Image (cartoon, helix red, strand yellow):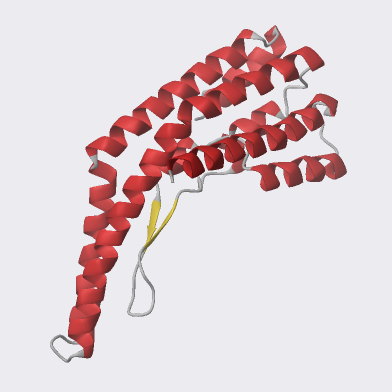
Length: 211
């Protein structure tokens, strides 16, 4: 089971590296004024890859509400506009070949840095969801047995939803791993900045100031 987990992580890192390499290759050809056809192609690569691990989505997951027919779920996709993503600014820096090679290397190191911590955060989410959904089943059984009304069921599920959100947000182990992932991202940003020229760095800083 452990070997399977390692192999899966290796596959994820390989896929991320391939997708990101394609993304960076497109960005090297891109000019400051992006034409719609090329931008559409670049975004298609971005959508396929999910190339760079999204720390913000993992830190602020959306807990989908439960009902009599639907269990609790978690969505760790960053819901902010695309302009907040690292891929957004990298596509607009007009990187040369040397810079693209360096950035690919930095991103690969970043993915290694966050891999274990991402898995731990996802594991905590799954454990808390499993526990909340077990309680949800108890409430539904009570409703179907006539022990509580539909209104009482809905209120219990709403309370359980709120409790689940708080447990996920405040989970100490999860918080620790998220902090480490943020440090990994800061290191990635620092490395990217080290290979940028003055004009690229100016645009980069403008983007980063909006995060």
